[in-house]
Length: 117
Image (tube, rainbow, N blue to C red; front, side, top):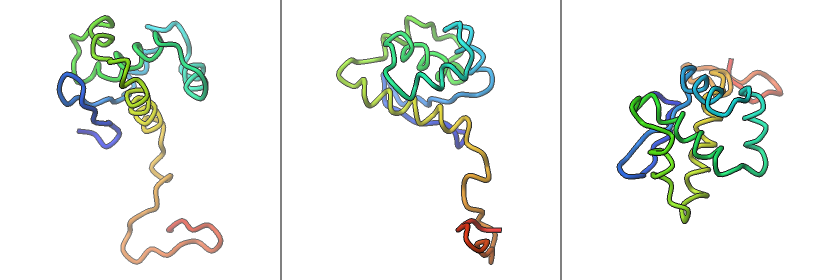
């Protein structure tokens, strides 16, 4: 699985991933630009938004999944756990390579930055 996918146990182990196509599907499903969706994730989120996020996030792994089927995978008692996995996958989709320290052999941090060069 790609590094920006987040595993989650639903009906079976699945992987939430927001590829470019999944993000486009999410925009089409919600009728909102991705920037508005990202802002919404920082606060209170509607249940229908969580369902749409899961639907889009699973679309690469299961292209035949419907919005309704995605909703059937969500157990309300696990809503916080599922929403957290969705949020982590969404954040991973926009993480830049240089957000993580470089692992080059012998790389030393730039003075005052803590980041490897």
